[in-house]
Amino acid sequence: MNMIAQNYERDRAWSDQFIPQIKSIVGAHLLQAAPDALDMRQATDLLMLDGKDMRIAARVRRPGYAERFPHQFTIRSSLPSGGETELAKIVNGHGDWMFYGHANEWGGLDRWWLLDLRAFRAALIKRSHYPLKTGEQANSDGTRFRWFDIRSFPPSPGIIIAKSGD
Image (cartoon, rainbow, N blue to C red):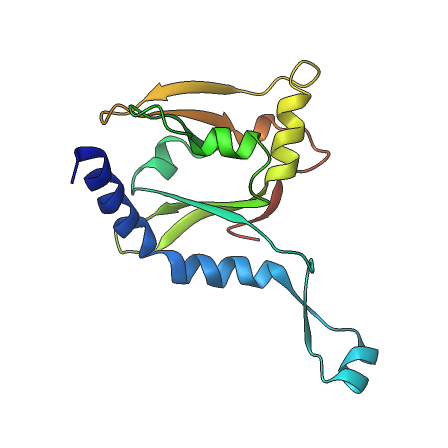
């Protein structure tokens, strides 16, 4: 197995430990109470917020970054292999929402955001009218990521669907 595949498997195994917590958080924002008429006539207590297939990206940063970069989220923008990155996939229209969280030392999640990727793409299109605070950063493994300051996004359409502490 090559080094890239080993790194992917290691990082995926680490991030997958947070999937149950992410499902619990995101699920609370996908379901809503059914109207009385549906409850009384159709045995329906809960409805999906949006009846279509929802594609949700999930990214969890390792402990320590929430304190250092409290208003930033990052998306991988370059791979040594030249493969398609998360940023390219999102810009090309893939994904509806993104969960972005910060791990703590105890295996839980501290600060997190649930982001609307349609609003993210709209903000990228409007950048000449509403400048975003963003930058590029290299990782030690040869990958690069783009960081975005969440406070610099336009208020409409809002990028934040939900956040920790709501």
